[in-house]
Length: 432
Image (cartoon, one colour):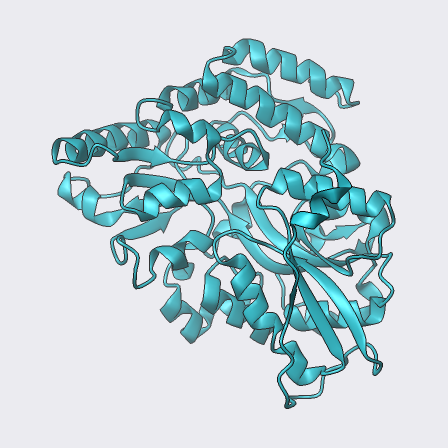
């Protein structure tokens, strides 16, 4: 069910300060005084970092006022709100922060950025990310930051309990998580859990479940050719295994967890392992973090060693076709996605960069040493089914609802996935 258009009222409007001064010449898209409205993120310092970077635009384009709006925390709620703005052809928002799969869904509502960009600028980005934002030859967004699911683990606790390396398989993870959980509770921490992740019925569960499915050899929900790929022994086994974690190495409440809920448990020092995105690294390394310097990250496990899968995430910046200041909005997007601004953002918040050169930037590597080991993760990250196009929201909701029913014990995996297969076929996709 879509959220009411009044959801806009929950957004917090902040006018970015406009300090005096000027830097290098930048094409601002216009010399007239204009105001552009930009919807930013809200998760784990995302908003604050965006405001900090965007505030510098006043130095180069003092005629442009940038209003920063906050989207809902839930990506499912965000998608519903964006769809309502676009259906209303609203000019209230000029620049949208877009999840990696949004451009294919919203193509008719976004400005083609191709005429505004020179090839040298675009060549700085990972080609796969540019391709992911290109629909029918139209570049509909520029990458702000990338993302791929990863496993966080407590280095001190693995050493304490005699483990030489993090888990390579899901079975190893469950065994390690149980051992460490039992030991820490015996040592006096009854709130300690082995593994926290995103189990709420929302887009985040689609990401987690796709990783379980793909890393078990079960496929990718819907193939690029439009064939449904969910009802198979590998996926049934993967989701049944994940359900076994709930109430054992993961709290029952994990079925309500989104990214920040999992991070709250992890960063408080109450979990051995966590599945999350790159942003949690910087927050975990903050001076006031109880786990500072006590953790690291690796690719997620698989059913067998070497079968790791990571859902491709990340967010992009796109311009609404209904903006009254398209040229100024495009100029702002280009500036925000330039090397220097991306670096400034990552220094504040972490996340995985969208430009290969940033992975060898000395200052960035000093602040985010995990990038040296995780840079290649983007080369094998598993995309969500872009072939669904405008139907993606329905596909994801059917998928995460079925998975949630399995995890909660409301349905067995075989039955839930057989029903899901038929429901996806009803949307127009082919049965295997």
